[in-house]
Length: 213
Ligand code: B1M
Image (cartoon, rainbow, N blue to C red; front, side):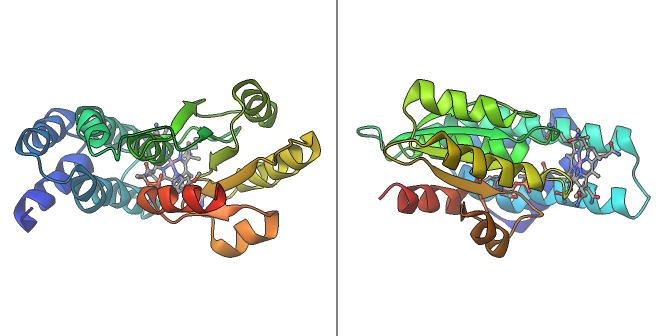
C-alpha cells in the first residue's frame, strides 16, 4: 500500500470525513490488501492525530467525535475483510472482552475483538462502560477462560485492577486469565495487577494464545 493512500486514509479521519474514510476502506477491502496495515498505518494514525490536535487545543469535542465517526465508518467497512483473514478451524477458546466502566472508548477494543475472532477465538464483546460484575458474570455464563479489558483513560485504568481482583476472588476453576491494554497501560502496569498485556490488536492475539496455553 503506497504512502499516498495511507496519507489519504489518515487525512480522512483527521478531517472527520466519514464518507471518504469509508470509500478508501472499501477500496482496500475490494483489492484484497492487508486491512490491518490500512487500519494501523492509515486510519489509526489519523485518529491519533485527532487526539494530538485536541490536546494542543486546536480541536474541540465535535472534531474528536467526527474523527471517531470517520474511524468507525472505515472499521465497519473493513470488518468483513478482517474476519476473512481468519486462521479458521476449531475455536481456540472463549474470550469475554469490553472497555471498563466509566470509559466510552471502544475503537481499539473493537479492533482487538475483531482480530481475536478472526484468529479463531469465540469472542463475547460486552461493549464499552462495562462494570466489573458484568465481565465476571459473562465469564461464568460462557465458561470463557480469558477476560480482556481495554482502558483509554488514566482515570479508568484502576478498574482493570478491580477486575483482576474480582476475577481472582470469583475462584474460577480452571482459572480465568486477564488481558489488559489501551494507550495509558504498560507491561509494568499489567504485571502489577497480575494480567497479561498487549500493545496493539495483533499482539493481543499472540498474548491471548500465550495466556491460554
Ligand atoms: Co477520548 N481521550 N475522551 N474520545 N480520545 C483520549 C484517550 C485522550 C488520550 C486524548 C488526548 O488527550 N490526547 C484523552 C485521555 C487522557 C488520559 O486519560 N490520559 C481523552 C479524553 C480526555 C477524553 C474525554 C475525557 C474528553 C472530554 O469529554 N473532555 C472523553 C471521555 C469519555 C469517556 O470515556 N468517559 C473522551 C471522549 C472521546 C470520544 C467519545 C469523543 C472518542 C471515542 C469514541 C469511541 O471510541 N467510540 C474519543 C477518541 C476518539 C479519542 C482518541 C482521539 C482516539 C482513541 C482511539 O480510538 N484510538 C484518543 C487519543 C489517542 O488515543 N491518541 C482519546 C485508535 C485506536 C485504534 O487505538 O484505542 O489506543 P487505541 O487501541 C490500540 C491500543 O491501545 C491497543 O490496541 C489498539 C491498536 O491496535 N489496545 C489494546 C486497546 N485496547 C486494548 C485491549 C487489549 C490489548 C490492546 O487487550 C484487552
